Image (cartoon, rainbow, N blue to C red; front, side, top):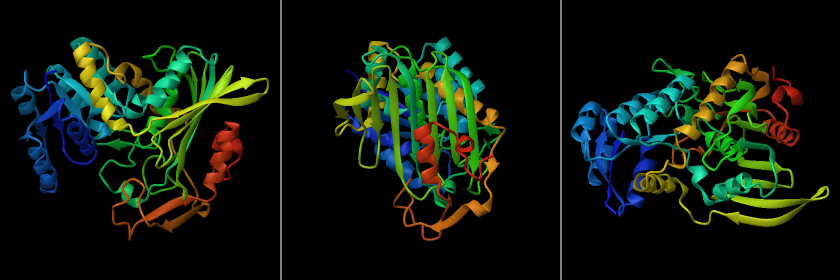
Length: 404
């Protein structure tokens, strides 16, 4: 197999994850080119990209024109506001694309990306890596082959604390609008987007489909000093009449999850992705009113993020769609947009329900200096969300004092 030649937009931030995957598959691919804005702060990352063999460009159009016929895949690990811009430009220039999740900030942008991918015939992968995991793929098979009967409902929640360091790490974190474009940065759109997307993907009728939303109810709350939401609830009824419930917050003390439950006619699946656990599932068969554990499996030592690249190489060689592609990922964008529309915006939580805590480390990057950082938390949020998850109720429905 000829090595795949790769170009990348940006070399810092989450681009490092893409670069690590390229290094992981050095026998299958090589980094040829990188577009980097000329700023001193990127110099160490530029040198790292050059060490991998990349020619550095300061103009993206020049890179696309010069590398035409040479580079086959362009990686776009950029901010949400530029996903559509760079993806469309790369597709029109004749490149296959690996775009970082989520698809885009708005439905219009997502549909534009879909239209251009369809028109050019190029592959547009959306990097939601968790769905590539062996565990999720086995669960998808159970669903699509009706091995436990029809899927009735699924739900998930995550308690992921984020400090001021997380929101200060770049210019768009916690923003509704950035660079004049709606991005809706929030748990549902960004940090915990994988786990909501899992629900949509498993609920899809066919192996390559995600479920399309039919009805959406949502609530958005803000405890931190940001523009967007840090605490969210969404309930989706899909076109195939599966109920999806998802709850997430960054305004908590405790780190937990995500955990998910998929309820079928004849059983259920409990899925978890806790710290130190690369993903595992327990399969239960329903016998009368009881559930009996019949199987359990995990991902072992699989490096899930690298599977996005491995699958893209196979998709190009076999002329098949990437596992996570624009056609089964834009449903997530629809849900995020409608989440903010249907909730009448974002409710600021009164200070009397909040605590400001010092922190020992930032979950997003434990190596950061957080000696001067704070975590604003909602009092008792962990117990509230655990109760919500059990009863499949929203913050308002469960009776949280601050919820309106």
